[in-house]
Amino acid sequence: MKQNEEEWVEYKNVMEDVVKRSGLDKNIFYDLRGNHDNFGVPVIGGSLDFYSKYSINGQLGRSGHVNSVTLTLQAGKRKYLFVGLDSTMSVGLRGPTNLFGHPTDQLLAEVDLELSQWDSQPLKPVSKISFGHFPLSFSASSQSGKTLKDIFLKHSLSAYVCGHLHSRFGKNLKRYHLSSHRFLSSQKFFQFNLNQNPSEGSKNCSFGAPPVQEFWEWEMGDWRKTRAMRILAIDRGHVSFADIDFKSGSKKTIILPTFPLDSRFMSTSSSHHEYECEHMLPSSYETVRALVFSVSPIVSVVAKIYDTRYENLDIVVDAPMTNLGDESSRGDLYAVPWNYKAFQDPSADRFWLQIEATDIMGRTTMTELRPFSVNGLHGKVSWTWKEFFVMGCQWEALYYPILWVSLYFLLLILLIPRAFLFFSRKQITYKNVLAAKGFISGVGLVLQELCNVPIAWFGFLGYLFYLILFPWFTGQVFTDGEDKGYMTYMGWAVKSSDNKSNHDYIGSPDVMVVVLPHLIFVVLPAILSSGALAAERVVHRGKFLSVSGKKKDDYSGLDQRSVRYDSRGNRRSKFHFGGHWIRLILLVLCLVICWKHFKNCRALMKAYEMNPLLHFPVYNLGIPLLLVYVIHKTKRN
Image (cartoon, rainbow, N blue to C red; front, side, top):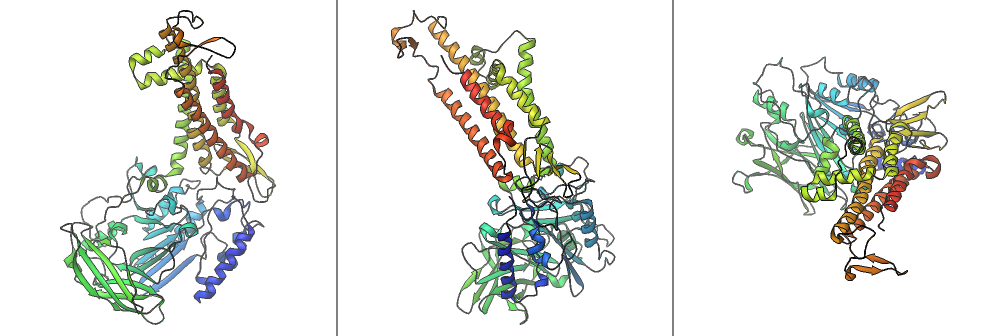
């Protein structure tokens, strides 16, 4: 959650070893700052900004957020443009409330300028790639409301490559972005499918027709735990990639098919338009191509194409490929001619490609089967729920709606039952619940009985207003441990580096990682559990009286078998409505809530070096004390 210089020294040594072993020029390496590299850094270029001191970019003087990480290559008539960007926070808070990328209007203008540098030469095709740390689902908008997505759509990137999320969320952290002109588009909040279906408009093949605004976002996973690495290639304008998993060990041979493209991850609109209008470069379609990297000489490479029309893998092409590379290349390009028009099909996943390579040691390596579509149709691919959660949700746009819905809901479940009791003489009884046999009546009883424990009810109401009006906690926000800041649901308030002014409400929506889990998984369950404990006591008492037919203090008419005696000789009823199991479940639930709450508090204490009694006593102790009070007040006599 803060900077550790020893780790940075280790990183510097490792990267110097990588440069030395590879024999490559150090200038072609780019290491980009992420949120972990910015944890606890009060000012860029300061004594705690170890990135500027130990990274390759820092050593080479690449101090800008965009400049010096732009690489241009030219091969033939096509140009290639790579633009890297650093959108980390200008004030580096400690984690976990440093989760989002925060591009400024200045940064967006610089990225726009870099991506526009060849727009004055429209007849010369350009492939544009951008790379940064944060996926767009975890990138905030600028002060003027602009986003990186707006810039990338404007330039129709081939791809935006990012990281940040780690592979534990899934291996399919990819997203296809397509411009939408609908005013009330849900894309501001959600994208439910990895792919978006482009509109099937009339085919406009004139050269003056506006290009389709689209781009792919490819998150790639992490090296730290999953040992993931990506090789990305641009082959005559066709962008492809291969993700390699080194967790099981080193790879002797790596194969990257560069054409035909995987139909699941190709720029569907432009590829389909170019093919339909015959604007594509025919020579780029006339061969099947693949890059092969190997530690041993390769003796054969074979391209295999399967037809799944009859739901079987029927091989239709099994052809040896020819090496087109030269001795200066680190990887060899292999190709084999084919009749691409024979593979036109209205289905995007009828034909599947596989490349097989054999080295001089007799080791055979095969790629995974991948569908392709020469006419630019996109294959279907779906997210898992975890992948949708981190890639399909635009969390900056969702934070405040979820926050206020949660707060209003919590206030309403406290205030509506209280108002009902105040203005109406009718009350919900357990008999009403049994007669109605409805969920709503049961919830109504729960919330009504919480109102009948007034100290608890006012306590929860006051706690909610505390969360809205006051700081949640005060802690160390920078690595030096000197300056403290305080956090509210709107963000952090910290002193500026010159100590002359304050930064108010920075780190929003980053604070959502603390705010939303606390409201949804601690406060809401605590209110409902307290009401359930109060309702369980009332139901138990009412059921007991209805069975005994006596007042609660009259046991004389009870069957002696239903009466037991305590250690003092006092008679007590053995009747228990459903036994003790309902109350026991509720007590266990209260323990779980407290465990979850104190676990979160412990993480915050470690992150911001806080004392729970000094720096956040209300936040830390409010919910547990209210639960203890309710448990005491609802105990059975």
